[in-house]
Length: 115
Length: 117
Image (cartoon, rainbow over all chains, first blue to last red; front, side):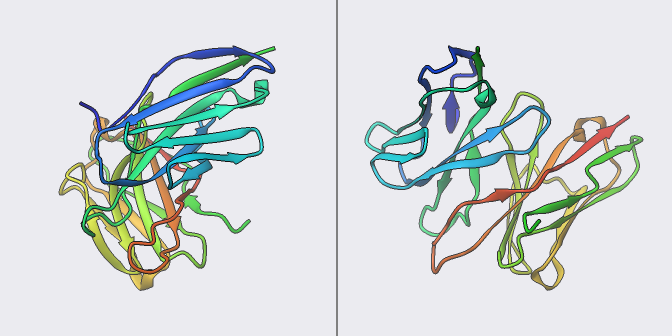
């Protein structure tokens, strides 16, 4: 089982719709969770971080975390063609101080927003 | 621009040659990370520094790879005797430690794309 799993997609949604991206992780002691957006040929750009169970909203983005289910998601409301990119879920584990902030990434979900 | 910078942005080399990449983190950040990303995959952790100390290395980091962060500022990643399998995007990220275990967001530089012929 991979440590961080995402549906690779591609996920295609019409402009204005809600895009839902999902991620599961295997390490129960994981504490911090991040979503990065990566355009083709570019480096990852941090768009959301979440540390506590529940929802966190930032503009059109909402991150949701459920540690009991080991599940984190990202919702993009009013999707725009400029949102078309690969979305990477990243998990940080700090187990008894043995990890110093190493991020483990999923393979990414390709999102396409069509006009 | 006060973000993470990397140099060079692209490097083409022949198999067997040595290459060195540089990363300049965000100025107040004391943690610096190197990752490697191949096509269609998420970044994979290579190594990590807090100030000048290299605190963790992935088993992906073979003996041909070495990283340094003298004086806790910029970092270099050297690959000796490059192989075609080393072709990838090499990403540097930095973050600011906040107390014990205060891990926070990592911000990535633009990356160095390595092609080994």
